[in-house]
Image (cartoon, rainbow, N blue to C red):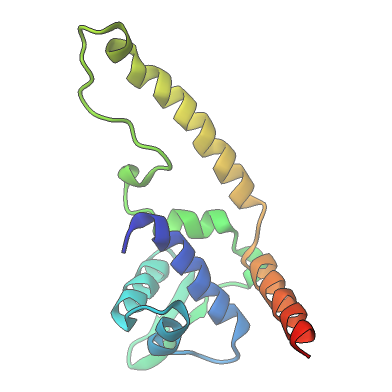
Length: 148
């Protein structure tokens, strides 16, 4: 799965778990995400390792380890990052040291990108999984009211 969709799939997965009574299987989640259950099982494994989910050997499904109002999008974002290469922006390698721009671009971009990363993380820290699922339920209620 491409990095840019891992975060969204993780939020989707956790939102389903928050919205559903009891345990739901990776097949059910995969049906909602419209992907292969193997992709969801990998995501569940990653979210379990990060401490956001709890699973039991031999028991289908997963559960949140804490309430959705205690899980921020920043928690989920960090859980979906594999390593430093998963930062918001990456800087290209080996610019030409004989060029004024090439000599200095990495240092400048590191500062700019670090500020952008911090700003994004501060925003994600303000939004909880509970807010996402609440918004989803409200959108569904509006959709159903319009169809009636």
